Image 1 (cartoon, rainbow, N blue to C red):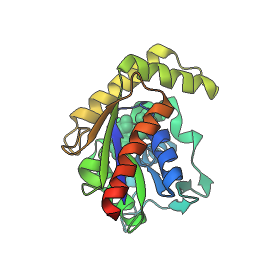
Image 2: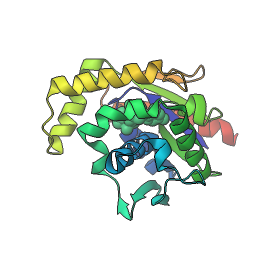
Image 3: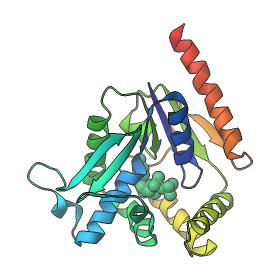
Length: 222
Ligand code: CDP
């Protein structure tokens, strides 16, 4: 079974997908982390995406493993986590993710790593491009001001010091680039369930999404 969560930044879709995956014992894929990884490595090595690739179309020293129902990403034996969420990565990731060759690389990597597995995946193009045959597709959004505030609180809680204004600007810039790129732009799949969680708590969003999934599982098993 494949469940896709696409939508705007800071709608809580990654933590929602993670909770849903945990609940149903599926694997969680945060596809944004892969675009962030490529951005992080290009910054670290001071190379373009094409310059990172070897003759086998691989990025040397990059490994993606499936541990505890989560994908873990390692570069040169170091697990990548907080390094992917810096302001520099935030400001560069959408431009890098708009390159067709980068999208091709990430999409192939996801399909190869998760072949034949039950997956809850979140991103911008999961239901439209990566897994168009997903059993259920959700599109999650919320009012921009609420999203910026949520991200601001998250950054503060993790000890960051970005201002609300700079976070808001970054989210708006990324939304614009993500929605207007030529390859696999962010859009609502025709068969997606649209959820605006501006006025919903995390728990309410979880309960709503779970009700659709439970119904789907019942339909499949009938
Ligand atoms: O967590 P947040 O919503 O801020 O972003 P993310 O899911 O980590 O994704 C970071 C960036 O990667 C997005 O702004 C997109 O530019 C890109 N992305 C994409 O193009 N396609 C995906 N399936 C996932 C992320």
